[in-house]
Image (cartoon, rainbow, N blue to C red; front, side, top):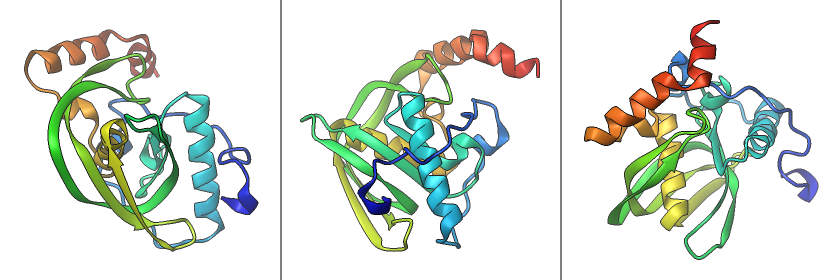
Length: 184
């Protein structure tokens, strides 16, 4: 980040888009301008993620349909992973597939058992255009795969199957935030 500053301290907290918002369900576009607007977006993503107490946040979750996400997420060994990636590509998933509880800032207060690989590798760029490779295991691998789904216009609910999916969708339909968005 700029001058070694703490990510998000210069950012503006933005409104998180909720399940059903079109930008959340549309594949994101590649970033083509690595200028000051991108740096501001990354700062705003961090500020919003921290304000919402999340571990990752994609640009489309604040209404910006670009391939960018930020993260501040531990792995299963409690090692903190902090960063951002622009134009990410999921280049590898392997290892054991585990079903674990997963939530999303765009579906506040809800979670469901979601299957993810316990290892993931993402390649992309920093906001200044430098190549970056992010290698995650455990919970951090889950986070990377979750944010990559956002890049493709998907949410974790799209991966939940069977009775878990039905229960999650019923809960979402009854959620107070859902009623608020339906009335606006």
